[in-house]
Length: 475
Image (cartoon, rainbow, N blue to C red; front, side):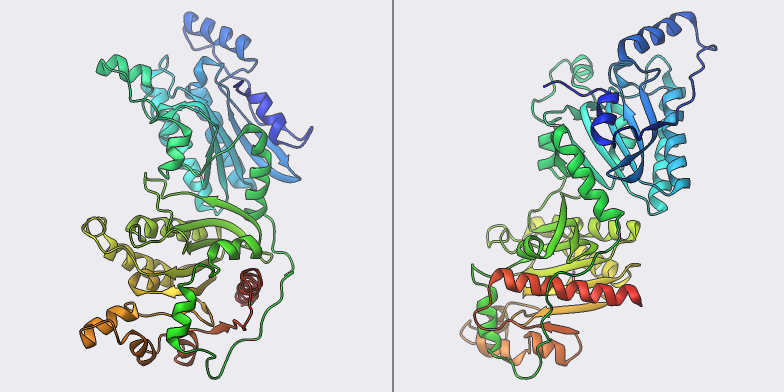
């Protein structure tokens, strides 16, 4: 596959004619003659005066700052001049209040400049974290190859990280590893696809698909809310249509709508984020940027379709949820959590993975968020795994949803020494949505009339979430 040049990427992503360079000419006068010759040859080969180009442009009409690596210039290595360009561009973007789009293709620190270039990783990192602290988006596209100090600094600090298919991405280049260790690096480890599977990056994206992906992400991160297009349902009150046990059976059914359906039918745009960025990924948790019925937000949601008795929701899923909480706080976006779990993993592995501590940390984060929060009790709400995503400014529940410290069968086993009293325990413990509404745990109940469809239910939930977010924003 042919790899795009720096100029090719600018042409691909930015609106025609909108790019304005921020780069000053590079002064090489203080360098030795041999290195100056290397730099001159690199510039002729690459068609750029350094390994990095920076500037400002428009992306579908939105102003953005860009930082683009050019691999043909000394393998995209970052010397002092290139590092200074990156720092200057990021700080200018922060001052102007615009997002940064970056793309890498580099072997890392420029060895010809040694330690003085190496320590510039710190200045680059500091500038990016100041940009994030200002609540401004930072998006990155990792290209082939991205290794060394680039991957270990500005290549690993974005809010959303995607990579080129088949790209070599790693801390230590495989050739260097083989020379140092006397054996080849294991194949398939330092690939974009493996990193996505491991939850280190969010997705693998073809270059041709990159503009659409960036447009969608910026639309969620930058564009204002839009008007609702879905109908709310009047809140359910009074006597429940079904017993608590009947509702529990409904939420356990294979046709029950979950967070996937809410995003499919209730979100105008969605960008999925994968993993903890720290080498963990649990499919039980969905983390996404979304526009639920016109309202941009960060979504964290327990996926009912991926939780089984053999593969329950583990502590890594809760760490993924906390990534979503952190993003919402940083970016100033509302947080919407969806609760739908038969319970967190109970195993030696989960204990060693700090499942109890992760539940506690999720509760503490949810209880102290700096942005508007809405939680949705969508279906099953069993145990600490459910409680972890519950605290919010507004708690919504579907009419058949429920919340309990244990599944009713577990409560029956403790109280009666058998499983035969599960239905009785469900009623006695007042686990149902209307009971939760009566005692103040839930603020609004979305009705589920007979004959309801997954699409209609999902759209109604989305409309209610959006209405509550509008109310919270206005306050």
